[in-house]
Length: 313
Image (cartoon, one colour):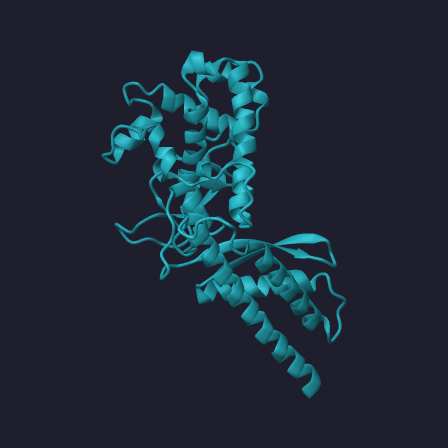
């Protein structure tokens, strides 16, 4: 397990200020240390790759085919997940690099800026959610991430710091174990951390941050072309907007009206930019625009039904 708390290489643990770093940065430095010093492919990372018949560990060129570091910091795409991820990565890599340079880790252990970026991608592509962040658990590095809650694994940290891994439902012999990716799997995630984009006929999911003008708050909303998920996401969104309304016969209608204004505003901000229509980001933008169109149509229909109920009564 690499979580910034356990299994810290002695060489890093002795560095002044290392213990004061946040767990994510410590995790990234530990991964980078193993990656840069795995000359005989005998580090924990090397053993993982060899264990599945892949050797050696992917080199620096690996991250060139991922999407995250192909988007320049400061670029605003209008796609919330991408913009948030680019800013978060830039800040984390910058803080990690400052520490690395102040301790001359490039000369001592070969931890370069490229190694740090490689480790950041690796953590987010192959890590599992524990609490509010991702960590590396060796047996699960090559497990498939899924939104199927019935078959995903549950992680619980024990009082002594170990991780208990259990499945949410019984498994048959030979059945696949999958990691719970419901909180982050999306078209943007596939692009940012795996360098791929999902086909038009595939499952599509995405996170939108909607502004509630009356409350002055940003509200997280996921869209999905999976009917079962979409029903839950829409009910949750309506519940969040209703929380800001006075309770009366018109509260549902006002909440839906505010949702529609927020969705339309988001649509305006996410419209295609002046870039090549062949770029991956523009393909993703098309998916998110389509998702917004579907949500606007749904809530317009719901608004009409609510209006009819009120006036028929």
